Length: 449
Image (cartoon, rainbow, N blue to C red; front, side, top):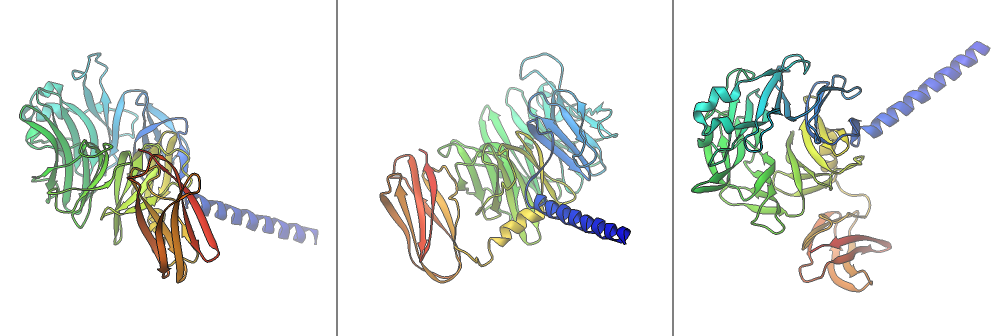
């Protein structure tokens, strides 16, 4: 009898333990979860299956985990610039040379590894394509990108008299490389949609200066110059099935010079999406019928935008460091983020589900935090109404004086978004308030000019 009681007690404890584990697991996988290197600032990540490679921002160390982040080992102790994994599992890395020469005469080298970073060999990329480059001895391989079909693209910065961004490509896992040199501008960022490849780059020299986009409709075999891009110092690029293009970077065409822009006519014209997000990295995604771009920012975390440029808000749940410097999507459906404090992970499906859930009919009054915040001079305010109601939204200054009535009307059930411009007001703290029957909610926003 005693044995039976102990057995039932043990079984009960086991069930409770399993329930707790499942609960914790569910909580963890509905937010960002840190998977290691919390003492390091991470500037680049490459992931395939359970293998993670991360490059640190300070001295360019490369750390490797072969068990999804449970354990980490240092495999390169300095000077790494970028890392990528081909479809066959081959590792590529660009690394600063040890030659102690001032820029632009210092060199970077492209290396590859067949044993997950235990040993490395130099890839003679520049030697293979030097006939297509001016001042080839000053050219530097910078970034490596692997397309979904396995084509490898290497961004090359020509540091000659007339600097150009250009790129080389390999279709045989990095053995043979071809390039059209400076006649084909691009390479700094790539994005892929089906058979289409788009890239952006910079030109600066005698008789030419600007930022251009180049498009291939046949997996990178032939290319067409699309035209100028109204931003420079590219950090984010998205190309979508509707052929819209989103670029994030810095531009002197806008004030302040931070700019997230969109073109719906293949670079003929550009429209401004945002001037306050300091984009550091972008990752376009496709999830069934939903497409968009995830933007990693300096100090504001992760934001989502649709393929039409609509803001879908921040996705920072669980993320304790909002300096996001790297984003990548692995082959198991996880988004990895490199931040100022380590590597983080979150399922893409959960992020996109969060977006889709916002379109469902609300069950409560909701007044969301304005975006962006701080702002200058305009910001967006989203709110939800669970039933047909008379809704009033007003703005007040810090002393409680009413500044403006934004909404005063009957609203049916749904989620709404409005834009408020404070161009005529001074910098400072303001409050916006939603009232409907007994429901009242107030939030703070900061105008910073």
